[in-house]
Length: 262
Figure: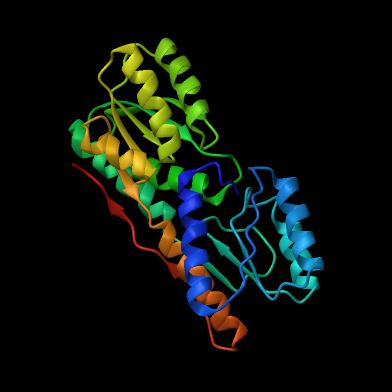
């Protein structure tokens, strides 16, 4: 979807390492978070006669025509990290984002003692990751009447947007106890806004990128939910090779999650 995010850089590098070990040629493209650009990239790769496609969708719905085009061309498709809302996919390699969102919610409940005002920074609308993480988080806090979501706003999985959105929320909301961001880039942007405001607000992110892990170590971030993007990249390439060799591949290949705390 984009290489302007350290999570997806790690995912790509994990895929490249696996391809090199297995003697495969890997062509990586960057959609720059543009669904139309991603569709054009897929069409170009199909015309070049690739054997299999591994796609990290910009948008789970918008990617469907690209997947169906590959299906019609007889080129198998594997999705990684974010799923697709349609088309035929051999396998989906990802963390359980609903479980991860629930993990984040349960940790904030613990930190807040079951009471507080919370902000949710949402990822790109239409992505399975944003949808699932939000679902898990809200399910976790649903039974806690004293936890109130005072603001819920999309910030595009982007650090700069996380900063600007959080600045606006801080101005509008005089009482905020915690923030859950659907990824670390938004969480890190929110941290900057919070630091400038001088307020003391807990922040939980998602991905456990290098910068987020450093923020936890320094005591600035409460925790991120850790995914393993290099493992995702590696496992998707391994699944691709198995399928090309005629071996069976699981429809869903899970990648472990963990909470990273100080």
